[in-house]
Length: 143
Image (cartoon, rainbow, N blue to C red; front, side, top):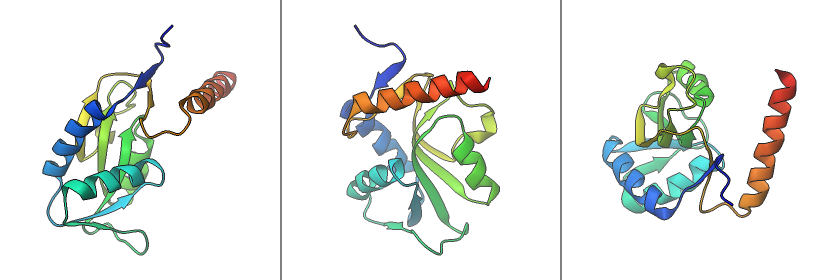
């Protein structure tokens, strides 16, 4: 039985979003990937665009773009934008955004869903689902 709380993305979802995002990004462009999700997206973008520069240390808002795999609640966008950075994301889940101004500056594809995303490169999707379940239980206790 399919669990309706989860959306499993495939390469068929990711390839079109990558193409759109590569066309949106300025050239040349300095990207700072958010660890975990942003690193994977950076590696894929590098295949499509040879003019991308990865920054990891000593970068400033001038010209640097923060790269993430997905904008979910908008909290990451809010934190980095407050420091003056632009944000690029492969996907943006508009169903979870708390405020519209938390959308990224560059987005490969908008997902109109509130489902938890399972990525094709995740080593153990069952473990990811279990971690999500624990987070939901914790959030309900805090309400």
